[in-house]
Image (tube, rainbow, N blue to C red; front, side, top):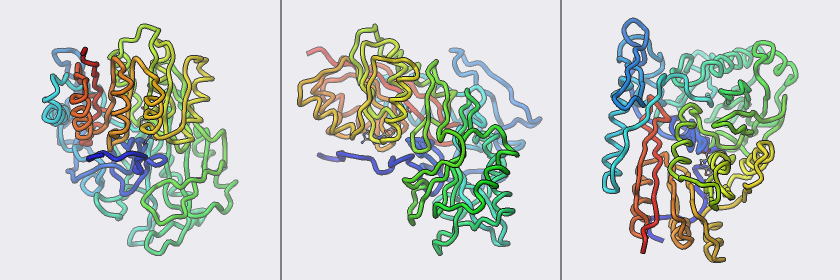
Length: 454
Ligand code: SAH
């Protein structure tokens, strides 16, 4: 099977939340498609504002990238030097975009022209999912923050420039409550203590907020009073969940969720569809750019209302549901059971009758479909950072869809997989990078391939 591995990408197990904390697609695909866990490197402090502390807008010639100009001077994140989350934070945003464009072009030029990257108008506070780890500093004070790059040392973070501000405020409250409620902070070295991590997810459209307290064991002492105190300070929190992680692992989330308050999920709206998001389901971390990305992916497919469409690696069904409005029928395939459950509810709640979801490994499922002689007109694929597998791609080729729309958070594995498709009868038609992760080195790309006529 060459360099490809069949099967499950373990790094995307559950939320793909891993330590140490780097933020990338994890958010995805690092989390989700992932998180705290995905990528990172060193960086300098400073970064987001111009000297007078304000941003200046600038329209590019194509009018698309109305990005703000930012200088390395002015206020920045006080933890930036140590925290590994934002490799590009000290770099003005326009330059970040140029660097990403260059990186994508270097990898993808052999396949054709790369469109100009679509950046954000305001590249700050874009992360709708904020994960912090708890620890004690040398003075014994409770701190909440991110892992220092390539280490398990925790850097306190209180004014992150890419994380949602409200979520950061909630985490600060939890840090203070942990002290007043005398909650034991988990110590990785001794495997002793209770409170390990907190994750806050906010629906930017709905305003709904989910707090996930990751504990070493299921019992939170005085839990009712804790919930009451947290909600008194932040009545905007709509649900609170305990996640039990009793393993000495670098995954952030364990497999068991215990509901403390509210429905146990949040809802949010993207491209006119409403989505339910459970603690363990992947949801893109930058909702503003996610709409740009999904619209581009669906535009590339040029659906006419009749097609049979596959949405592989579908998460909670986002791309498939947006495509289903313009297609005959859609099948979503996803490994994570919680995400599939969310996807089914989402289809029902959005009154979509032409979409169904299957749980399983996308490669195995496609192989079976190809063996049964089934076909599709369009395949969307949005795999984790590790890219797709040979079994998956071989099966796509066998099924022979006219179009394949590949959404990727890792241009390296994208280049590898495009080479496979190119060798097996597909030509790359369009490639569009989208900046889903300002201040980090990560970049998303959507790519249209079409079947070469024989
Ligand atoms: N398209 C979705 C999800 C993309 S993230 C969105 O935009 O929200 C990648 C998804 O692939 C995750 O939901 C992850 O759980 C899933 N996944 C990882 N390995 C898989 C596999 N082998 N088969 C099917 N799905 C997989």
